[in-house]
Length: 143
Image (cartoon, rainbow, N blue to C red; front, side):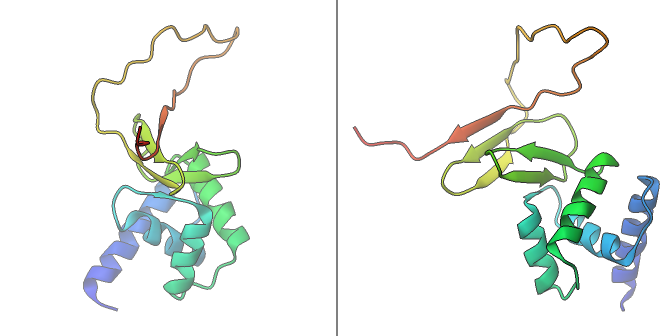
């Protein structure tokens, strides 16, 4: 193992520990796959495919469990786009998304003039934690 790879593993191990999770071999391997390529949006199935291709012995159920644990620990944001289509976003800052219908592709809207107004009052004892905007795109239809 080269020095760069060891440094990355130590950083991922530290990130997982600081989130309050035990750094198991599978969590570290999945976190490394998730965070090594910068901000991205992945489904559990896509991460599972990457893990298998990288030689990480992990089941799809374990990938789902790890992704939900990472989300609860604040390492990921969950985005429910279609009824059963869920993406996990490595960028946990407040931001919004474009979704290309038919391609199942999601990407960040560059920070800019997105305004949400007239939000309803939350029920008593509750506060708004986040507002997710997903702008759905499709190719223009010819007239």
